[in-house]
Amino acid sequence: MAFLEERDKQSIEKETRVQEQKLQQLLLYVSQHSPFYKELFAKHQTDISNIKTIADLSQIPPTHKEDLQQRNNDFLCVPAELIVEYTSTSGTLGGPVTIALTENDLNRLAYNEYNSFSCADGSKEDIYQLMLTLDRQFMAGIAYYSGIRKLGAGIIRLGPGVPALQWETIKRLKPTAIVAVPSFILKLINFAKEAGIDINKTSVKKAICIGENIRNTDFSLNMLGKKITDSWNIKLYSTYASTEMQTAFTECGEGKGGHYQPELVIVELLDENDQPVEPYTAGEVTITTLGVEGMPLLRYKTGDICMYFDEPCACGRTSLRLSSIMGRKKQMIKFKGTTLYPPALFDLLNEREEILDYVVEVSSNEIDLDQVLLYVVPADDSEECDHRIRSYLQARLRVSPHIKYVTAEEIQKIQFNEANRKAVKFIDRRI
Image (tube, rainbow, N blue to C red; front, side):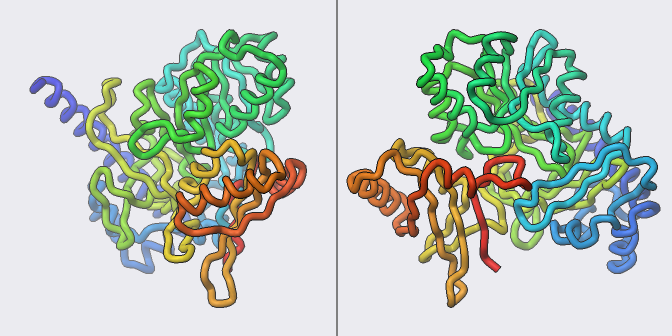
């Protein structure tokens, strides 16, 4: 045991030395090439020569989403002729942000996802069916594709939606793994049941889950994860990433949090006063990108609330791990004295068979208090179904949100429009 602890300590110290060396390179790079960070350093009289350790990063004020939205081009560190790919954020919190990548950035992105798929027990023997878009400036799509290619595994680029086509392709090409949004996996399961497909006799043995939580903060499967595994005997791997960080945190087979890639990013979890939190304590994920050439970021506050765990994983990796997203800072709802984050509300709504689909809409009333409206597709139109839904929400939330029942066609129109790459489950109309 003492040997293992010493090995872990040496591994962490080596990771820290590599990070601090790359941090020095990053600070020099942005001080020369980034209009935004040149101005920030001058405004706050930041002497980058004094920043030598990860702890010294606290001398630099955080960068916020609004900075990227308002001054997008001022983060660009290379001339236009070196940009080979333009990607953008989904615009969930305000307007979308463009992230420009160089050839080196694309190679870094591929390396990131190679590590991620390897962490999620991937190998060149696998065949991955990609149930997501590879267009619409979606960085994740090209990242997954590039990482799987680097892994040497097979790829089926089928795109999102159309359960019938997904199952026909699974039957014909026999993928071993799928990459998909968890709620769409549920739609696959429901289609299979109606079509008489025995999903546990197919070739698919694992799913890389993107865009939605499948676990609680104690690593247990949440209701969405349970619904999938109760019907389909496949291994689920959770992921967490963002376009801005150009890096992913991906679970290994132990399912105990998303593994950190310290050679690609520095992560801090900060409290309301921008101070680092302790393990097992909620904090805002704040990242510093390492090795990014086109649009590197320093202490960028993602708005995502997570916890971290620093004990070594049973898989042998020693770097910290992140929990599932507990919520987004700007999406926190204060409703009749109760504090809610959308992911927790989604878990409650996913739990009931009476609720086939939903969208949560938040707005402000005339005295600037949060109001919650649930668009719900009910299992049927009976008073009994309505009573069960309302009683359940009252019991679990201790408050009663407004409910508007809609059809499956109506919910589709609310969830999707031409600008959306994935189904919208949360709409924030607060000013």
